[in-house]
Structures are given as structure tokens and as C-alpha cells.
Image (cartoon, rainbow, N blue to C red; front, side, top):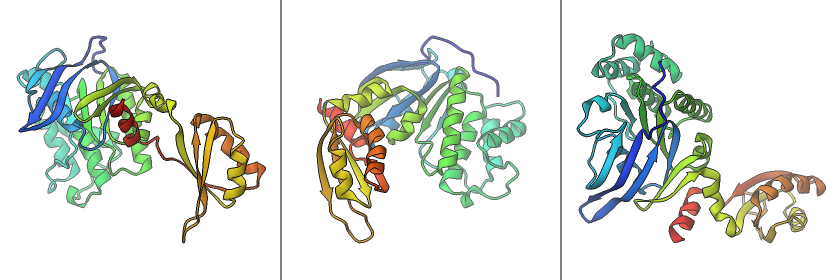
Length: 317
């Protein structure tokens, strides 16, 4: 597929946009501008991500404010809608169709010159067999996700809007699509990807928009936003075959403020929870500490580096 025209001007502009449904405010006074590359839209379920993405695609108008894609209103400008594609969160496809027939239909509706060839190429890009005769009703959730991504590629879009596109994918296919989105962004396209999974967002790159309770809670570099939590201790669970010995050893680590032992339970090894002000340093030190006491590390899991914790922090500030 050919590259979209590179530009340094904003490709998506949102100016004080709000959207409400009856008495429920779904999006409140959101403003941002983004250009080429991959931008992650991060938010818990119900934060307003899907409503915001629907406004970007022209599927619903803002009740207040404005949305511009490539300088135009996506609700009224048909030319800009031809340069835009969407991967919806819903499994929106004619499931009686084969993958090729469904993606080819998307190409036909977009006026592509050779819809069959373009559809076949798009399916290969997402690692699906265009000659698979099966109906997509037989497809797994992850396969259906990839079909949706394929249909979004057929019009060679300048702007791609993807709503939770990695849900249901196995780790290898998740990595493949993350790499694909990165390549599309590097070609000069504006790719905005929503997610509620912090680890996924970290893979997309550093540019993120954090949405909480319908408003923009933070923007910018992923690591800077994550470091907003660094003025309070991080909690990390460690499971091991020698919890008391390892807990005693890690108390000597710089930045460790507290260690709380957890009892063993049927089918679950013992462990402890650490509070530390330097989580990266602790993660490096725990391996050495386990070797020093001949302990086997079975699990090292952050308990408050998840998305909900970040949002509780951001919204409460």
C-alpha cells in the first residue's frame, strides 16, 4: 500500500468537544491536536473513548465544540471521509460472508480500482488466508479483529481510528498488529488506537491521551504520565518458594518502605507485598536478592501500575 502524504500539520483537531446523552455527559470539553504517527487513547471502560472516536469518524456530532479531520468536518465532508477508516469495537461484519468477500465489499464501497487484489493484500497484511472459504461466523474473536483491521486498510487511509483492536488476540498476533500500526504511523498516517490495557499502550509509543470520566485527564509522554504515581509507593507482589528469607533480604533494598507477608493457600505459593518508592530499581534488585538466598522467583506482579490505579491517581489530583 502506498504511503499517505506526510505532513507536519495536525491531522486530527478536537476543540472543546462535548457530547451528552440525556443527563449523562459522555465527553466533556475535550481539546487536543495530533499529527502523523501512532497515538494511544487510554481509558478504562466507560471513560468516553468510544464516544470520542465516533465523533472523530463523523458517526455522531459533538453537542458543543468542533472536530476536524485533515482540516475538515468528518460529518459533512465526503472527501475527507474517504481518507478515513475505522475499526469499531463491535464485531461489525456480515458474518455469513467469507473474510475475502467482506473485505472486498469494503473495497468496492470505497471505490477501489481493483477491489479483489486490494482485499487479498489487506488480508495477507494481517496474516489471514484470503482463500479461506469459511464464513467468518466460524472465526475466533482474534481472527474477526484482524478482518476488521484488513477492511480498514483497503482505502489506503490517511487517518485510522481503531477502537480496542487488540481484544481477543493471542500474544503473537497482538505483537504483529502493534508492529503494523507502528509501520502505518511511520508512513505518515495518523493512527489513533484506544485501549484500557496499560501494557498495550506502552508498546504503541510515548504519545498518549488519557481519558477519565469523559474528560482529558492527561496528555503527552507515556512514561511521564506513569511517573505521576512516583510520589507514592508502588506495591509489588512477589511469590517464591522461600518467602520469609527473600522478604528479609529485600528489606535491605534501596527504596523499600514496607514488606507484608502473605499466607500460603491451596494451589498458591507463599509470597509478600513490597511497598517501594523506586519500582524499576526494585525489579532489578529482586533477581539478585533471590539468588543470594537460593529462592525461586515464581511471580513478580505490580499491583498498582495498572490502568485503574493510574486513573484513580489522575482523577483525584
